[in-house]
Image 1 (cartoon, rainbow, N blue to C red):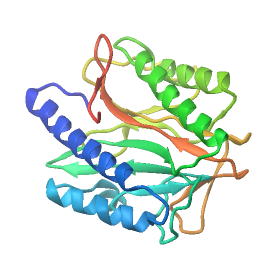
Image 2 (cartoon, one colour; image 1 turned 45 degrees about the vertical axis):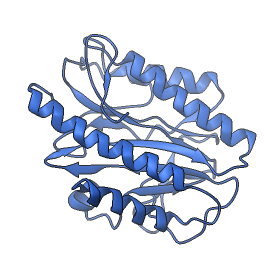
Image 3 (cartoon, one colour; image 1 turned 180 degrees about the horizontal axis):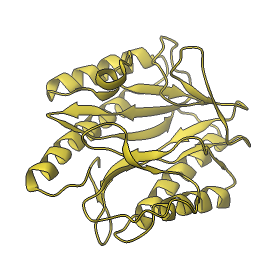
Image 4 (cartoon, rainbow, N blue to C red; image 1 turned 90 degrees about the vertical axis):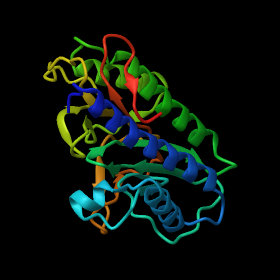
Length: 247
């Protein structure tokens, strides 16, 4: 999607507001004893308050409002009824459909007290998102985003999960272009004014960059059991710093 009108911009901002409000609500609810299924139900309440529906449910028939991935689960985790425990690493991925527009964002939080590795992993992944956003400017190639992510993650001693990409978003969940989290020279397509993309570093504390799908057919996990973290924003490309639509 490329935003060309004020109406489109306002529509994306509204969808982004619902994302941010849902993430704030879920983060505040995370504590030992809460189940991912309860977080999913809470997200459904926020969606209904704002006239939103789950884009993954609408598009792919996903049996969730939001995805909740725990520990070595990276993304697309189906919310379970296993209570969260101290030290768990929890990734929340929120993608609502609001009046014809879709925005997408994710955060990872640790249930305190967390291990030093978990805290460093989360800090690394959030920092990788920050440098990725700084690289996302008009005229830059898509691979500039991946280069920034990969450089930051390697510098901090962690592993980019190379099989999982960011993507265009706006009218559908997954649109062009793909946005890899590592430097891939073939991704030369230039970023242009108004382009809407979801930038989402996914990082592991393990050594393998590969992922596997669990038996539920949805949850993607690290192959070596390494803890995983995921941060994401939907942004609009500009000549300077991108406009973060999901902040």
